[in-house]
Length: 238
Image 1: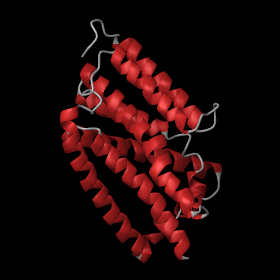
Image 2 (image 1 turned 90 degrees about the horizontal axis):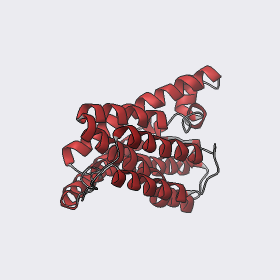
Image 3 (image 1 turned 180 degrees about the vertical axis):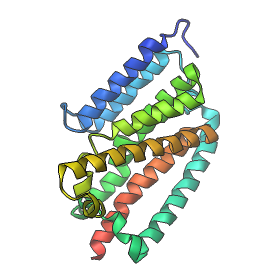
Image 4 (image 1 turned 180 degrees about the horizontal axis):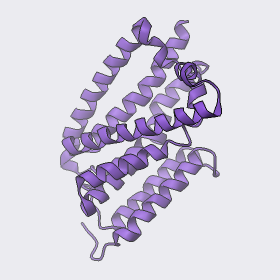
């Protein structure tokens, strides 16, 4: 049910961006953090803004009649990603792509915590709800699908500027390409932003085609969580 006098886009969209900026700074150590509670708080605030804007569950991709279809899409996507990761991890010439210094030293319990708690709750739900749910849904209502896809995807790329600052040294295959120089770090970070922006377009298209936020949630979780598992398994096999 919509409110009688929804807030204007000129107020709603800056409010959404303000929540995301604060959440991003807290998540990356630039502001005090409450851990996983940051994501919960951000999602709650974004939900209030959606309601303030007169939005509905359909706007954020969570309408009850779309959940079954979205779940089927998500399960199929997870299966495809798992198959690709398995083949890639087994082939000698692609195996090193999965190596990651952030995961290799972790114990099995720590990896499980990341895969089943930190990634889905602290990363996937917040990012998908924010970018493919709230931003995409409101922008599509205000300006149409193309604008919603473009703007939410670019902002999704920029969201990854801070977490990608040390990417060149965390991924051995990238270190071999970009080295340890400041210029290499900048180029790697820019590449990560472009890549995640392109991924944002794919996530938006999954949202559009499935009609549900569950489809991009499935792909996002699979690529992140199964990546941790592949890196962990690779480190233990050496």
